[in-house]
Image (tube, rainbow, N blue to C red; front, side):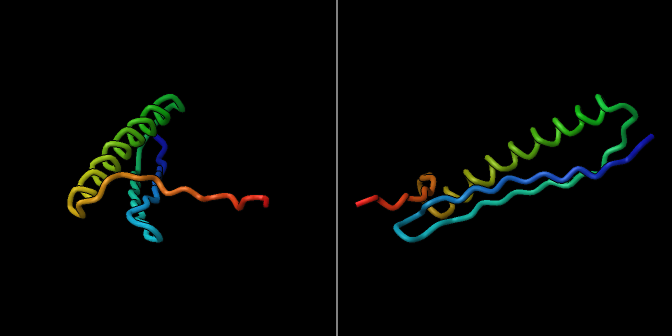
Length: 81
């Protein structure tokens, strides 16, 4: 039996107002035991699913609590005038 620590995270920057952003960051770290590479990959995929569910929940709750709507922050390229 082998052991691995799998660490994954998602970070998203949201524009909440002009010149104001909110960073949402969710991180998961799990120690898994596995015997085959396929088993490890399956466990890693399951951790990814948990991470995405947690991220979406955290994002939704954060926006609701702060009474904000979801707008992704973008970087404007300087125009060539």
